[in-house]
Figure 1 (cartoon, rainbow, N blue to C red):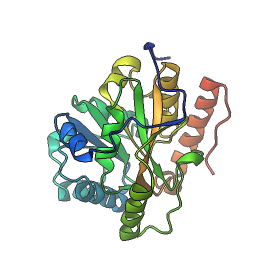
Figure 2 (figure 1 turned 180 degrees about the horizontal axis):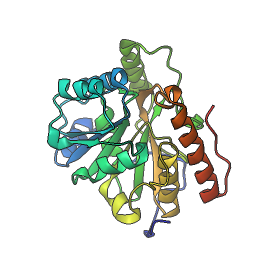
Figure 3 (figure 1 turned 90 degrees about the vertical axis):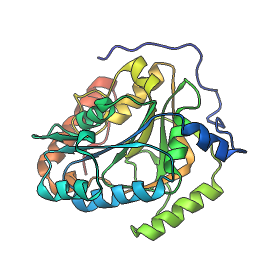
Length: 281
């Protein structure tokens, strides 16, 4: 098991609390521009979804500077064409000649180049306006914050993350994102576990507890990581005014081999934590 260190102090006792300056969002935005932000997208040959994911990142991140890193697991020609279409520089791509799995791909993205905060999003996720400001500012607010995730429509068993999305239309998703931003306060909700379609991790988290456990192949690695963060005395939080759309399970749904790997990940999680986690359905 990975070496971990504890920190002094910790998150507030209240489940819901505000660490975000709600009164001066422009000041927060200007401050974020002084930090280095890496956005990592991992893909397992889902070019149609990858196109939507990269489009949303390009259109919904505002003018906040960031480096886009794409990690492609055994990429086919269609995936390569999408990456080329969105002008991702070759030096900011990781191309695995054989499949290494989602969890190792995440680590490859995090380790690609140093940043102050790393924002991961899966290839079947569509982000909404202001997502990057919200997740990055939440993650950088205090050094007991270890990981910040948005609310979403699909997150496995993470029911407190859920918000209903009526359909998959891009325009409807963006409208729902604006509604969430307007009617939900910019709070961090201390919550365990959060699910990994999208999340932000500050560099200090990696410094304290290392990277994701690569004994997981494609599922539950981010949940395991959140539990390690909490065990180290840090906080896993949900940014309540940030919504992303998550299709979910698009790789495993078309590949029986990945279903088997998903279930092996479940068995490993249960063995590691003494719990009973979901198998693929």
